[in-house]
Image (cartoon, rainbow, N blue to C red; front, side, top):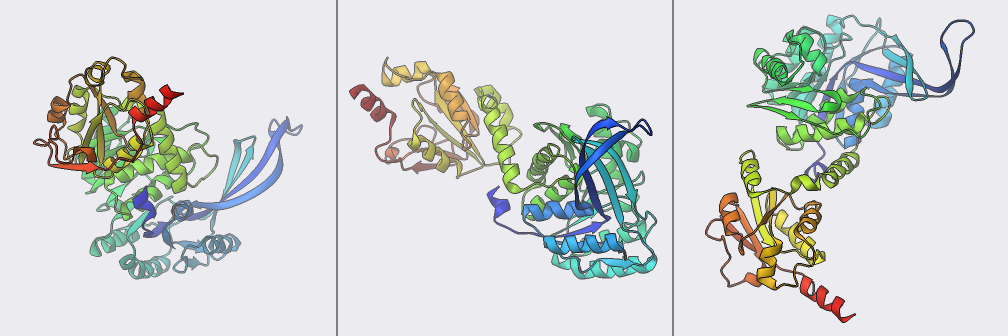
Length: 472
């Protein structure tokens, strides 16, 4: 998350802009005129929809955003442009088309349930004149941005010819171009970096009924290969997403409570583009987008997400899955086979009574690499090393508390007096011990690529805590 906060990317959004209008109220009776609900409207709100929701998500994440589209020269179009300007997006490149009706979707919400929606919009392709003017704006903006996002809602802005031209421009300037597609013919997105259809959209486009992992893989690989993409990502609503790159990977997610999936695809596109432009890998970016989508489906209406909300969500998952971070030696060996490109840090100890010295030591150790594995002495091992009065806390308690720390990736108990066998199995890049090992032989130093010593906080130790407790 720190890498995301350190950089403000410049992102270009191209697509169908619209207004999402909400009438909020409550329903307490049925109309005597017809068997329909009578909604007592108590307030109204209007937010950016369609590609505008992608823009809004990017702005809430902290990106600098430029937006290109075609709107009508009408009141809805003026309201939309005013909202973009107020939010801080660069909308100077948006084209106005005289005979076009700016999209507006009005929803009536009663007691958190959508009752009805009515639309006012143009759905015909934009004119050639508008397309040429829009492409000219693309030629100005694309060289200056980090990534381009195409948000297609099938309202006529992303015509086949125009989309082909934009993708060609992106390739010319070596810019990633991500697409949230629409329709049943994805050929106009050929050559893009990636596309992000949902499961239903991918089924329609590939004519493959996605009903299990086998059909999911078949559909995803079909999209990637037929459209010459670097990646394809199929979003699975509250079930996460599937990534098709060099290999297939399914990322589950845990949404606290699903209120509304409206706009979740916009959030995925925005957060993917944001994370990639901040320098995260595709897998890291997909994980971030997955978490962002999980936050959004817990909100009502087209919603946005902030870095703080994603951070809080991921923190809650870590806290809820501490037990899953406790592994056997065999389990950690198998797990590390999937993490060969990450720097492994190893340390070990008894950690009998966890104190601030331990926590700061582990935070420093984790900063040396990507994954921190903590070898934890078993109860019998501690008794042999420190006497029959130790440990104060049993292995199960010590392991769970340590696994709940954000800095600790995995806890692996061991029975031996030294962690040599575990170090031999893990083969860490960096072996970390306390500074009191200065000048001493560190077990496993011949196996790890590097040994680093970390200074303990003076006066902080389990032994001293026990001594103070016995004196009282």
